[in-house]
Image 1 (cartoon, rainbow, N blue to C red):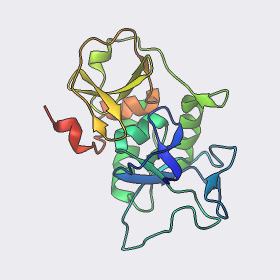
Image 2 (cartoon, rainbow, N blue to C red):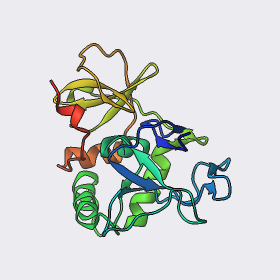
Image 3 (tube, rainbow, N blue to C red):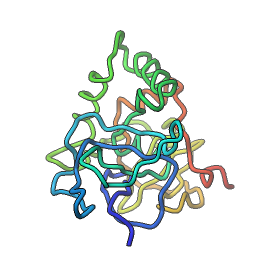
Image 4 (cartoon, rainbow, N blue to C red):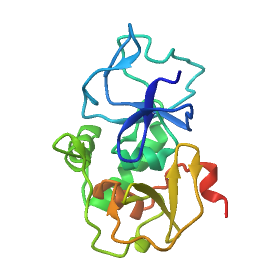
Length: 206
């Protein structure tokens, strides 16, 4: 039976056999004795996107009183949920993200804790995923941003919307009605400034 550790673009953590391209964490939110989640869904404002394979190290999932291993289809999914690249295992990507953050958000001398503080305000509202209004047309969002329309999440790529699933992305659509923004606005500005998240291979399928 799969563990409850797969993250959706809305930030929910569910059980599914699919793993995805990245792992990550929000601190310790599990009981290692039962390998089940606690009632809380985060214990730290640092929500990270990490590599599944780093320097040959392998972790037994949810086996220790250490950070809770979560899994994402791809980096766009993790960014939509409110995570950001890890400075330990993804230092180059994290530095590119920080540089784009400074450019896109008009800041300088930004630290990881500064990013975490802003993201924590933007990703949660009364303990649940915060959805943001979209002033411009959704077709003008940068590649890698994600929106919610009804019960579905969509990746924006080249001005079109591709429906998300744990297995990958579906056929592109142009008919979304009044979608709301899933990806935190500050992260959308990072994407506008040129940061390109790693996407699942299905995103490139015509």
